[in-house]
Length: 236
Image (cartoon, rainbow, N blue to C red; front, side, top):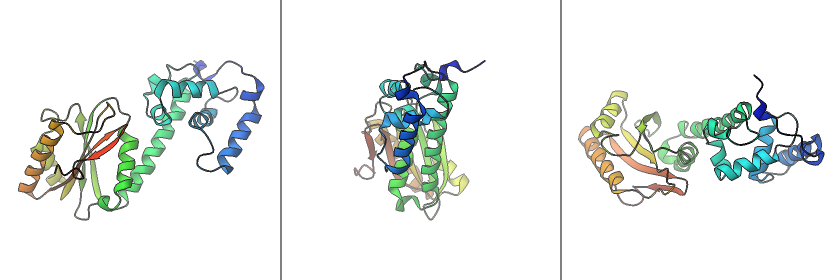
């Protein structure tokens, strides 16, 4: 069945024709990092899926629906397809862009000691987690040189002992030969400030780690409004 959602209504030539696309391409290639507005970035990404016609209305509708370029790229494919003009092919074009961004950010982290490339780690975590609609818990296990050896998705849900068990976190580290770890989770509300439960579970895992020789370097909370390091706040 044809993907009719990726074929918008015919638009005036001044918007949907090759001239507009060529001008966007020229600005992209020669205008620098800020040459295109966020909706224009989406316009260009949609060119691959929508071969003819004006992609600007769909691009602006996506920004209106999801709030930002990052919000669009991190949206669920089905949610993307609820926007007029966006079909399965368009949604796939947007999702592959988000996947490429994650892979690039992850490579930056995996190639260097984590504590020496902290901003790269924060960039990776923000790209990967800031726009999640569920609370996700991860443990980054490190070797003796503080290189990432395993990025473990513990589970989804509130960060308490029902979702994350201190002894299990440390046992996993021992099994894979980790000597340190960083706890990570996100707040779907957008506010990254730690809760009492966040602080308590961190202390329990840190204590379990001390007994068995695994250091808890930090607990990082990611939100759309930024991030918080419990180490930086003096809470570890």
